[in-house]
Image (cartoon, rainbow, N blue to C red; front, side):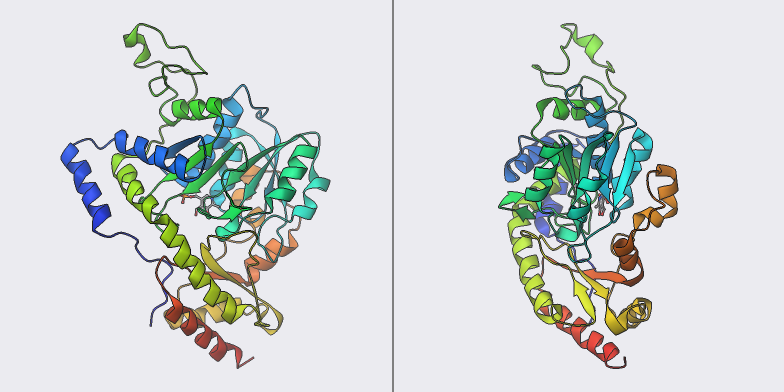
Amino acid sequence: MKYSLVNSTFDNKEIKSMHKVIKSDMYSMGKNVELFEKQTAKYFNSKYCIMVNSGSSANLIGLSAAILDENVDLNKGDEIIVTSLSWSTTYSPFYYLNLKPKYIDVNLDTLNIDINKIESNITKKTKAIFVVNITGNPNDFKKIKAIAKKHKILIFEDNCESMGAKFNNKFCGTFGLFGTMSSFFSHHICTIEGGLVLTNSRSLYEVMLSIRAHGWTRNLPKNSVIYKKNKDKFSELFNFILPGFNIRPIEFEGAIGQIQLKKLDNFIKQRTKNAKIFKKLFEKNKFFKIQKEVGQSSWFSFTLICMNKLKNKRNELITFLNQNNIETRPICGGDFTKSPSAIYIGGNYKEKMANASYITQNGFFVGNSHKNISKEIYYLKKKIDEFCIRL
Ligand SMILES: Cc1ncc(COP(=O)(O)O)c(C=O)c1O
């Protein structure tokens, strides 16, 4: 028995869609990407969607556009509240955009930001909360929205691990000014590499259209709200109005995305069924804390935090599990504030984050899948029991 971290979601349809792209002889960003963006916006009930080459780039372009958009009150040097447990590229745009993170510890049950600690950390310099929905689990957006409204600050969402998750029947990624998603291989849908940004703001969307490709005007609509195009078409061919990147996706990714999006409902249904089994087997196990679901999780993975007699024995346990063909991973690499990269980014990274630090030492996850993995989950339970009986 092998319990893998990830299974491929591709079948003949994805392969055919790539053949179609080859036949068209048009590989760089074009109509397939555009169609996928339209379908994604519709699926998530968002006005606009823009595809980029990764979830990391989605975070970068979202934050960059918020700074560049004249309608958004965010500037270089501003402070943003953010969880201490997330992926490196939630934070790395802070370095490049000179934004200051105010890290907050996580809740050990939900693994998301400790909402009770947000308000006391808001200062005059705080302009936004960058909310991360970790491993499929939504934040309590009712509470977060109330705090943001009271303090007149913005909400941004890194939803790269939580496509399809919902809070109060609304999709995560649609609660703030913008929300990002990843479609990298191990995620809910796969476009090989890929990232998406959802927004209801027309101006933010247009800024992103420009900075995704060199900062030029070419991809802006005729009736653009951020720039009036010249009648002279030649001058608009290479007209750079903003400091841009080139983080465009390619047509293969757009074509595959259209197929994968159609499968997303069923993928999430199966992931939720798998989660039921996982919860049944581990919820009452005294050696572990498993993630407490808030709203409707899309169950990216199954987290286990070693407690009681298993405390500080995580490494022995995962060695044993790996020897038994069960793949494991750290939960987002643990407390980001204590990673060497955090020194570059600054902010309050020297503060102790007790729960995030506990997760670094004692947490790990096993995979979830769009396939029925009940046998694998029972196998995991059997092997964990074998290990724990020795304690
Ligand atoms: C929370 C979070 N943000 C951003 C990313 C970056 O996504 P990508 O791997 O598509 O660059 C990840 C990657 O898994 C992530 O977990």
